Length: 329
Image 1 (tube, helix red, strand yellow):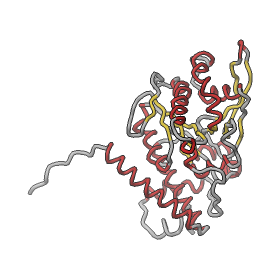
Image 2: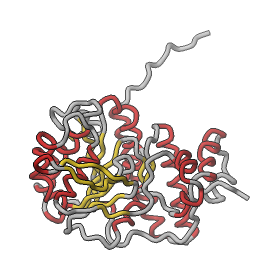
Image 3: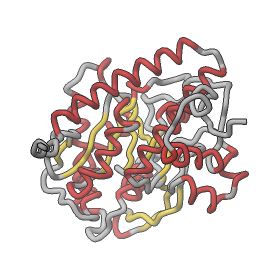
Image 4: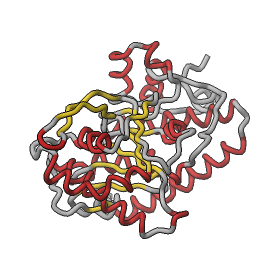
């Protein structure tokens, strides 16, 4: 019996090299393995969401490129936020934000203002309905993630997350209050309506309200949203660590209770590629087992198109090694 998550026409009938086989197969003993009964998101499609990704110049050639090359290659709308231009991702430049850990505050708060202005320059039909915040070391499964928005109205101020905690927030006149925040590592959603409400207050909050020595931008944004009466809508499937750590920390029953994870955090570049390959096979197999040929064809065509677009990007950005001298007798 083939224990690997992909269909029997993959590993059983073809000669995968040992590295790929062992690298991908290990996830069969770690993550949930739904084999059929796929149902698509009901309320929104991929184009309705803009993915907003923190990064820094030190990660352009590693984490950020791995993200761009894998799950993000099949995403229509996204922003890499950094203070340093880099057209190959491409980066939405946040001037003066810096590139250290403290820069996350300015990247998010100033970056959201840039994004809002860009969105307002589009027609209403072209604007995104939701925004998803994550880091460049977060592996995301958009086809699972979109289901967490089912039944929610982007025209209302809403923020959605799952790996959450409590935080202490600065209030007016030196007061303090408690709020709930979703982990920026696992990622979180907020609606276009919430961005519309928050954007006039972002600069003042980062410059005059939030402590200058604090880099926890996910907490800061939650505190600001709380002041406008917007609580956290909690959903399942948000994980703030890699799969193996998540299994050890939570146990199999808790980890596998939700068979469709949204994301994993702290993913190194090599694992980013491996997870993407694994979950591409998993999704294809579910569609095959369901005999869902319409969605299977859509997925394959999208994957092929993104693959060749990525090859063109690689062609433009990569310098091939020099060719050595001819070997003569």
